[in-house]
Image 1 (tube, helix red, strand yellow):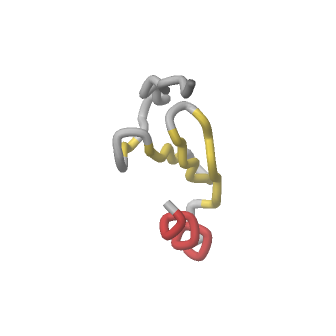
Image 2: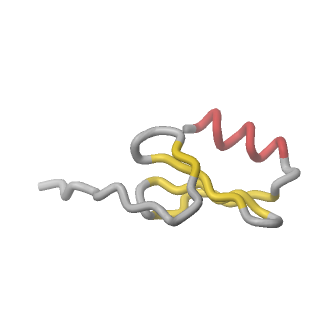
Length: 56
């Protein structure tokens, strides 16, 4: 039986959807699904940003 995931996010997160959000620090942007980090890329890396947002 699947277990429900609580929407627990780190402080300073910008929510995109109910379970998806991003946190930006000085050099990187990390995307979280629930409480799990799923992708990290550099702040200036536009190609990686476009790739991961198209997959979401």
